[in-house]
Image 1: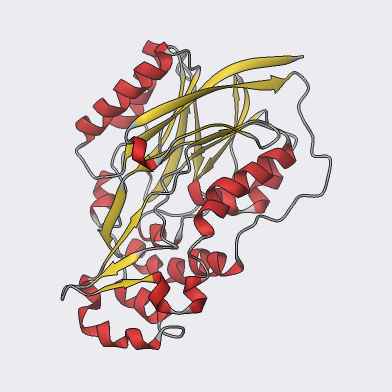
Image 2: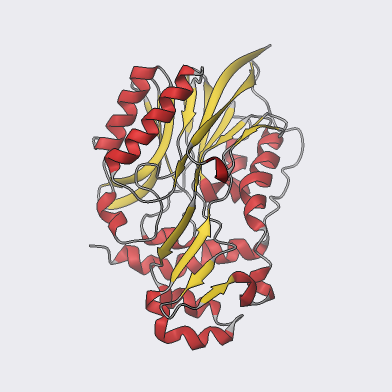
Length: 339
């Protein structure tokens, strides 16, 4: 026997905007999804602010008693849905990227991002714990964006959940353009074969890997995303520049302009709903703009257990090196010296 539930993933534009405006746009889509029958609605990562690398992120961090969390609680109760989304959350002296999942009766579950991606570590710290939300819909495992590339997290959830839920907002940083004050532009393809080898890695991380790993566990999967494109300054441009030089030494010509460099990238189409066997049931495209998509999934009464050895995510080793080591290392100082 199985239980059938209806899920909706929401796509919001990544562009920065005031809190009230972003919450209003999110509420309109949540309401439409609920009216279409959704029992669980998933908003993008950092849905209440938009996504950029900027020092203003520190002042945007809220608490669980702040306006965004209380708004989520109220919307969930009014519409009778489970509602998930992430925000910068201040916890004591530290800031986390926290995924909150609210039930309509006011219960809330929290998951803090385990693996901030590269430059993100400039604005919040990492966690090292999973969260299983024991909801009326079933046991839901929680992750945030780049976390899905890490096999150890999937392994910790195996045999313990009925559904995996991810909030994400991934710019396609493996295929960016760097913009300099004099009007020069540098693409990843110009930075040599080492970095060029990462250009097609984003779909492997945010589509192929969750489909593979969720199928291994044997559970359905839902992920949100944002749409549009990011253009932003970097938290430590000199540090990033020095990390790039060994494989692209010709970049030294841009050293005098490096403190004003900006990076731009489109958003990865990560808004997907997969069945327990990894088949895609629904997905969103960037060109659709702000929208939602809904699908029904089946949850077996008997919780699935992996029946084989865990497959290795199809993510190039260089992506892990750049994301978890090089760019993370150059970003730590920005967080340490925040005001």
